[in-house]
Length: 336
Ligand SMILES: NC(=O)c1ccc[n+]([C@@H]2O[C@H](COP(=O)([O-])OP(=O)(O)OC[C@H]3O[C@@H](n4cnc5c(N)ncnc54)[C@H](OP(=O)(O)O)[C@@H]3O)[C@@H](O)[C@H]2O)c1
Ligand SMILES: [Zn+2]
Image 1 (tube, protein in one colour):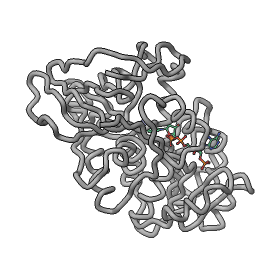
Image 2 (cartoon, rainbow, N blue to C red; image 1 turned 90 degrees about the vertical axis):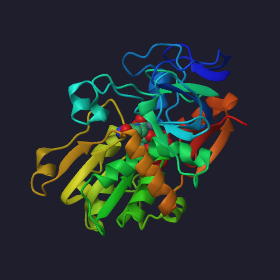
Image 3 (tube, protein in one colour; image 1 turned 180 degrees about the vertical axis):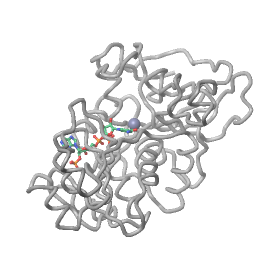
Image 4 (cartoon, rainbow, N blue to C red; image 1 turned 135 degrees about the horizontal axis):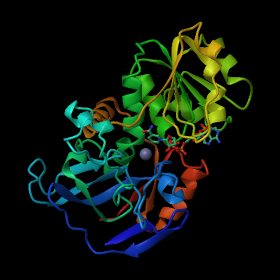
């Protein structure tokens, strides 16, 4: 099979031929149809995540069809369409799993990080990592929902906002452009924040009621002028940009961080205390959360805007994401 691997931390993407992987007990081989390129694939490319063994095939926004079942797998059948996201498996035995908190499994695996992912014609994943995919969704359009979608959908639906509340989305990229659509479809007054004027028309098309260009003035003041945000969902991978919006929270407001940067976020205690503000984070979710995301997206017509590239052009496709040029998610497609 053809695959795209990174052979060392900081290495380039290499198109290689590999033997077809065999599913072991409890595992499923998936014939990949599409795989989104998430900003978190940079962890694999750059080696910024602990414990990655190289060479590694990245990719955790995977849609494909069940191709072969390992011993003991009875929950899926050959030919069934499935998705694989960031949450790549759990042990069922640790304290977190016994409490039903699979995301915090002590032995959690990450697709495309702990084992080879979806930048390939085939991949093998544990059966508990698979989500069922509604027929209504096209594979290339469904792929980004497995990480960009679930992360923003699940963060927003658990954030405690009510219909009519103001939800601001910081960073209108792969995650952000879906977050804008989810917030709008969940009944929120939706504000898009982007560092420049370029994305205004698209953000409004996606459902934003208001648009704030964070480079044009103080974004916190601009949010306060709209009444303050109940939730600021931050997808921007930049802590300075995140710190700049904390002052835009309204009463009981929460800054909910999903975008990753190594630098600390700066928040003064008095930015939090009077308005009962909080700062939190959100990881993606379980395969069941993925199924909820896919079902909601199909029913409420939330689809990513995608640019498709053949697998062999993964390097070029990745650069479009990294350079903030993609509108809004780049998806690798595997042909047949
Ligand atoms: N918590 C989780 O489970 C989870 C899941 C998936 C991804 N992530 C993380 O979420 C982040 C976003 O991922 P993505 O795939 O959506 O990335 P993306 O497509 O590259 O979008 C990121 C957006 O952030 C803004 N941005 C980029 N660089 C910036 C800078 N230097 N300063 C201010 N804003 C900047 C840009 O939006 P504007 O041009 O509109 O400003 C850009 O479009 C990444 O850090 C990724 O690792 C986390
Ligand atoms: Zn991701």
